[in-house]
Image (tube, rainbow, N blue to C red; front, top):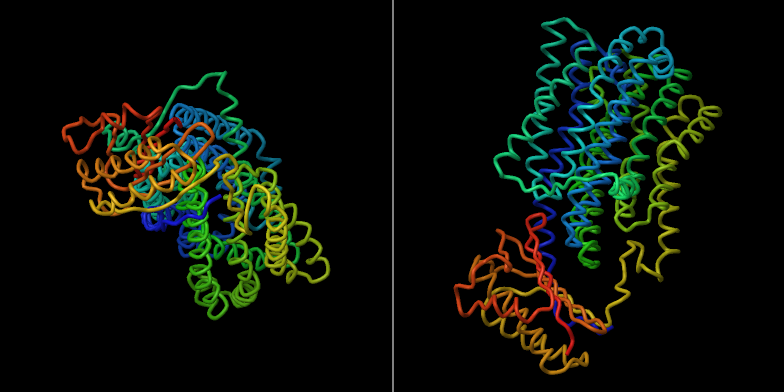
Length: 580
């Protein structure tokens, strides 16, 4: 394949990534308020044992997270890929089926929790001191399952629909209401720790009310299509796409329940408090790398659907760099001054305080390594490497960590629990790097598994600006390159003209002059042009041809196919020309 002579600036993708990063990170902050800030407030209002009760409910919350990850993350990823492939009907059906499945499974959790409390509660809480409070907290928690599963699944589809800010707003409102109602239910209504569960339910009911209001106002364009029995394979595809991420959440539920039991067995109540504190620290760090993953994955999915593989590599590298830089700051804090974090959670009893600080210093080693592993796991789901992604999920979850923690605790006591997390993460990262090296050279190149174009004979990938001189120069250069590729002179000139007309149209009608990303592919029987720009929607299929210099009729008449979509705030036009 001929070497690219034009430069590609990744400024558009960088701008889009950063545009999504802050809202998505705020969304994960809001989601985590239900975990670590909620626990912080409960600890300060009711004491450290109440924080332990909340953390004993983590497996239930993680089971809910499994549902909205399976159908929310998986469905939203398929939704974004379908949009990138210019298949909005499939995207709409993925949304419809994901919502139906999430709501149904949420109802199953509620039914199981209310009908079998005597079986489930003793497994989650083996400490007789905490069991009474936990039982009341658990009953309210399972009532929340249908609403939380449904709302958070729908929220997952908002970023790939170009509305990350609405996703943030829903979660922020829900969790601000949650915190306010924590205080109201616990202090004014004297409901104890179960008030925290009622506060969570209240918050998401309020947050859910925002979504239909905004949708009815037409401010958000979300693709929705009715789906029937014949469309169930799409639901299966959603579940397969989100399977590894969902299994990670389910693995958390098993892992945390098992590790809570080990903490209680080898450390008593102080061990449970210390382990709960380490989980809270993990939640804090997870806000940031989960936000980075959330910002990168919809964009990666769209680029994968459009077969812009080098653009995908750029976004993946940026996500990894941001994850490493941000998490390093937290690891340094937990290693140098963990007592400050313990004070935030009001862990003041000498035995609990000393054990929490000691455990966190060891536990925190895993944060950076695990963040890198999770970025790869989510990326592999987009690539369709579902078995590989599932293997990472299982090893990070219960399959790798639980046996390792049990073995280390057998020989080292409670210290084995702290060391199990970093050792498991190191083993997992080494395995990922070795397997990536094994896969490179076939469908992929490099350790980042950049996909290779297997069908196109030639490819040109470049960025151009909207100045008249630049447009004219690029048009002539593209024409010459096409001639070198063996095209007839007429077809080569037509390709150059198409790119010129798209650039002129974008500049004249919508004043987009900064940068356009162009991906040109040559096949045996056709030439395909993908033209991408940021800014307001500029649709060459709908806009009127009011300017002779912007000859939209020329584009429409001479192209064999002309498709347009406005995806994640990006104008994406796909032009097909038959070779003649």
